[in-house]
Image 1 (spheres, helix red, strand yellow):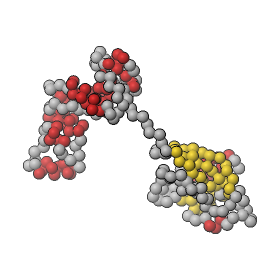
Image 2 (spheres, one colour):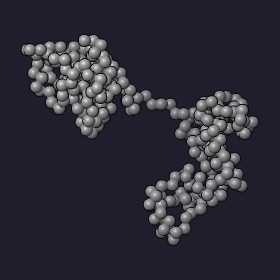
Image 3 (spheres, rainbow, N blue to C red):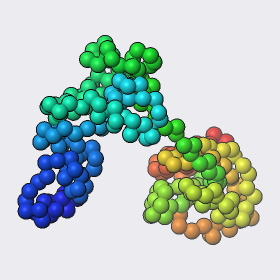
Image 4 (cartoon, helix red, strand yellow):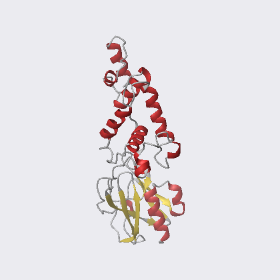
Length: 258
C-alpha cells in the first residue's frame, strides 16, 4: 500500500492531499488514519476516533450500545466536541487521555479533566464501557488419540507439515480437526481400552480427546508393522518428545494409568 500510495501521489503531480476526503482516497488509508493525518499534520477539523477515543467518548456520553453497533453513535458524539481550533492537539489529547487516564481497567477518574461532565462516572461504572460484543461460543470437537506401547516404547507419528500442529510429533489420532470430529478409526486392529479423556482449548475450538490404549500388544498381538510415518519413542523419555500440549496431556494421562 505504501508503494501504491506513492504512485497515486505521483499521478496527482506530486501533490499530497491535505483534507480528510482527499486522504481517504489514497490506497491503504482508512477513516481513522485519514482523519488523524488531516487533523494532526494539516490542522484540518476531522473527527479522529481510535480505540482510546472510542472508550473516552462512550463513557463521557454513556453510550451503552454494544460494539461494533455503537461506533456510529460514538463517532457522532465525538463530532459534537471536536473543535475547529487546534483539532490536531485535541485529537492527540483525547488519544492520550484514553491511553493514560481513561483506561480499560481501573480508570483514574479523579485525575480526569472530563470527570465533571462524564455521564458514566455519574451514573454507572465507567469500566463497563464501551460494551464489548458477547463472545461467540467456540465449537466443541471430539476426537480420539491412541496409546500404542510395546517393550517400553510408545508409537509416535509425525503430523503432516501443513495444517494444525504441522510437522510435530504426536500420538496417532482419528483425524479430528477444527472443523470436524474424529472418525474413531484406530491406526491398527487391536483390543482398545479407554484410559480417560483430556480437554484442550484451541483458538477457534475446544477439543475433548479420548485416549485409547492397545491392550493386546504381545507375542501374539496385532501386527505393528502396519504403522507408518512414525517412530518408537522410549516411554521414560516421553517428556523430551516435544509433544503439543493436547498430546502431552494425553501422555500424562497414560503414564498415570499404567
